[in-house]
Each structure stands twice: as structure tokens, then as C-alpha cells.
Length: 111
Image (cartoon, rainbow, N blue to C red; front, side, top):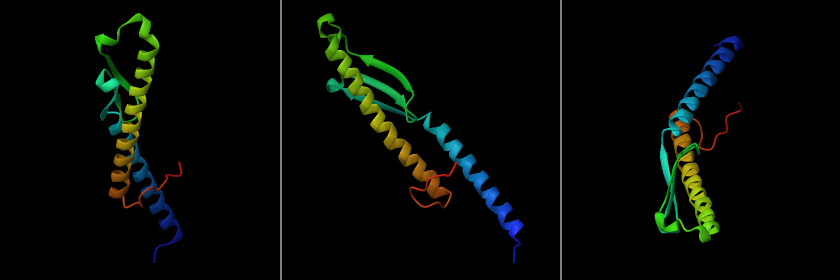
């Protein structure tokens, strides 16, 4: 039978391995791109699955000074669409990482 000290050491090593894998997964999320759309695709925002904005594309037809508030709303809507997609991808990737570590789905790391 293992001593308490051996079990604690094994648990610490397991926690370090899990932390390393979670950090790697977080890094991977910043490499995955999603695209949010609004205005039927007239405004597009690309961002990483971590939520970092990579680029914004605005159709020339929206460049009308009198319609600035509409454009601002469309940019916000495109970002919110991208954020929802980023969160979805991030949740999927974290679930895959946790499953690969033998952790139950939705397990929250205590650090």
C-alpha cells in the first residue's frame, strides 16, 4: 500500500499535468478563429476563440455619414455574434481537454 506522502506526491504531479494541459488548451484557443456577422454579412468580425479581435470588415455600402449609429450597432452585433461563437468553441475545446485527462465534463479547476 502507498504511504500518504506517496499519494500526496502523486496527486500533486497529476495536478501539475492537468494545469499544463489546460494552459496548452488555452494557448490553442487563441489560434482558433471564429467569425461574427451582422447586417446579412455586411459587417464581419474575426476573433480568436479566446475573444481576441483579429479583424473587422465593413462593406462600403455602410459608409454613409448619416447612418453612423446603424453601423455602430452592426459592429456591436457582429462582435457579440463572434463572442458567442468563440465561447462555444472554447467550451468544446475545454471539454475535449478535460475528457482527455479523464475529468468529468464541466469540472472546474480549483486554481
